[in-house]
Picture 1: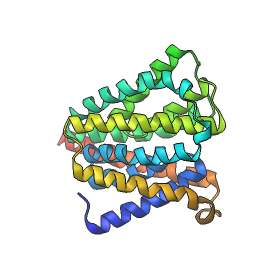
Picture 2 (picture 1 turned 30 degrees about the vertical axis):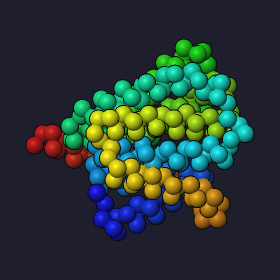
Picture 3 (picture 1 turned 180 degrees about the vertical axis):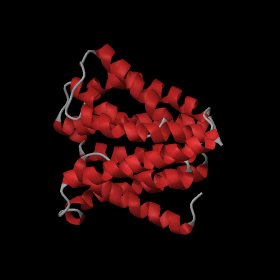
Picture 4 (picture 1 turned 90 degrees about the horizontal axis):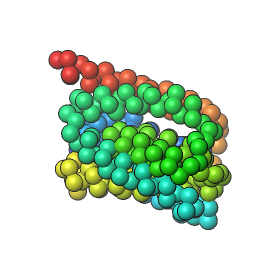
Length: 248
């Protein structure tokens, strides 16, 4: 677990993550993973991040609650919830180095993937939404950062603006709850990790309110560039150490 100074650093980073993600619309989980993965390893960091993203997303639901569209969220939830449980169970079966390799490789992929999917919508047919939700759920259960796949699904369902933000937060929050259940059932998520995850998640919430004040001089595109570079670096380091351990 974390030492006292690491707790302080993690909570401070969570506050900053909530602030910066309030500017660009994404990145809280990725920023936290950049800190937690090298310190804790993937088998601990991924379940902790799942817990942290629950209060983060439900805080966003409250902020945009008037736009929440439960009817259009249902097809995505029908796929993403069981998919998350399957992914979390599969993740528990991975060895430590293999879990690090999967998470590190996916972190690297998230940067070009996010850019490719930015502003795009997939077909809005319910079966497409269920299938896309299932894929997203499995990937989210096995790694971190797969939530970027939800946005094109919800765009395809016809959502935009506050409705997109609120519904994405609801689907994401529900997905992370199921991930937590899966990790807990497989022994990866104990009370100490739940406390750490909840503390980090709660710390991100006030950050969104501080965004305009603290990062007023930081253009959103600059934040995105910095975050993407950090994500790729952490992914390379995590995957590199995993390969070393697997070959050693």
